[in-house]
Amino acid sequence: MTHHVLTVQCPSTRGIVAAISGFLAAQGCNITDSHQFDDPLTGMFFARMTFHAETGAAPDDLRAGFAPIAATFAMDWAIHDATSRMKVLLMVSNFGHCLNDLLYRWRIGALPIDIVGVVSNHMTYQKVVVNHDLPFHQIKVTKENKPEAEARLMALVEESGAELIVLARYMQVLSDAICQKMSGRIINIHHSFLPSFKGANPYKQAYERGVKLIGATAHYVTADLDEGPIIEQDTVRITHAQSADDYVSLGRDVEAQVLSRAIHAHIHHRVFQNGNKTVVFPASPGSYASERMG
Image 1 (cartoon, rainbow, N blue to C red):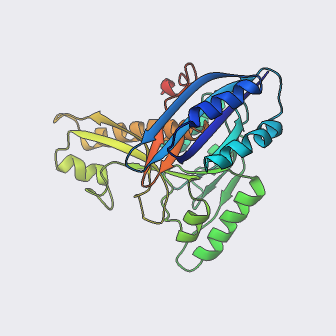
Image 2 (image 1 turned 90 degrees about the horizontal axis):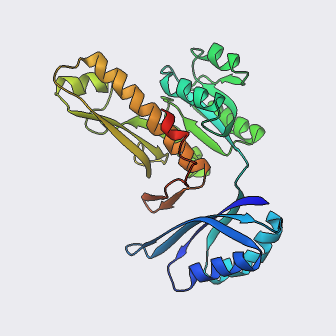
């Protein structure tokens, strides 16, 4: 018995769910989890279904059979193998809390991905990465060599087969060309103070202003810096008795958790881009436990 995930987005109209469920039933498939959303503002329909092919139907046969239905409704769709692991390339600069968190979750099986390498513009975490038996690539970035550096990065993406890039506190701005080429396949994490507290030491700025809530935002990367569709957010409450160092420590914790949850949602095909926003369906029963570990 094979396990699959069907994702669909298309203009909203009658009969979509009936057509999908009817097709799966006819192919001997049992739907085990289903979520849908109809956005009246954009006129778009979104659905995610997990199903078992109890007859052992091959994925290619399912795709070929579903294609005429998809064409009828002008669907953007895919059938994914639920057991396959997405290939992910991590990028980091000099702040390692998100990188270390992701490596730990990956090592214990809480984040089911294949890490194909780690890229950095510094050597700070080279030993950490190599000790995890992962490839480490230093790509120095300057104003003068940025085109060459990004060409090396894209060559690594092609060579490794990376399906997702994660900016785990990577502090270089990616070019518009990379953002467009990898649209919907680059996730970034940043503190939620943007744009209120820009520049260096945002947590110190927040401390000086007496902020009562700090948080983090994970989003897809677009050409507009830190303005991409939001995938996941969270906050933590601060009191007057806490120090600027406390702000940093708590901020790092929430950044790591938010980033891991965003990656978890993406690799399980639960995130759909809906204009400047996203539709994020909840995790299937049981599959969210690994995220809740942090």
